[in-house]
Image (cartoon, rainbow, N blue to C red; front, side, top):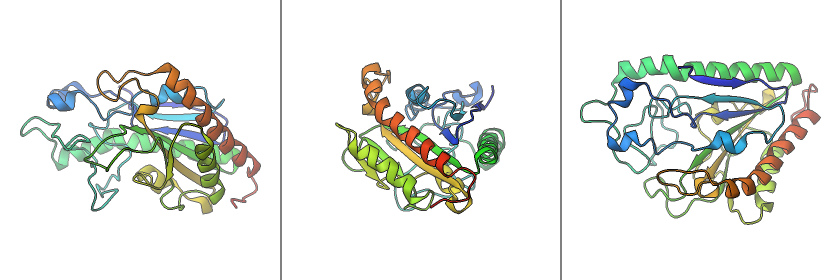
Length: 271
């Protein structure tokens, strides 16, 4: 299988989609237990939700599931959130803390290293190549990393997650204007709650590529799945009515980011 699906556009905005893939090689799938084989921790339908919101945006989508290897984790295996419950480069558990592998069948260090080379590295090579290409076109690139998660996961956070969770690693991964633009649209979106750098401050992708001093700006959006799914449990169906409503502010965000990037295109100014 192809581990990454790429659509090259001419916009300065790139959409990263590291967690929408559901492909699992058969030999790996057979080693997942009944809990793991549900593939519950997928960013269900996020590529559909964002499709067509920004004309000619570049998209880079991992086709493999995060249980194979997580494309939004540090390849060295360093925790994103030290001291908090989270999942690793190759998860041992699901988001509820339940084991996902059959007894004795979790991958060891050598297999994890092989998966890193086979899946994780090609995804990030593709993402870096698109950042470089877009920056060569415009002198600037904006990577918007697309995510979703269940709104209620006691293992990871208390209470109910806000609808729109914006992550910039404390304002370090993008220009202040980028952060402000996304946050203001989220705040004005009627019927939705939002937070900036709350429980989710941006994963490895956001932190690794965000270099505003080099005109590469990265922001992560983690959506509560209740905003666009009929149910956050099986069968994880897409709710077209909910989704169409949510696509309005999401489209506004992407178009605002594009307008901002084009206004700074080629001039080296990232203020």
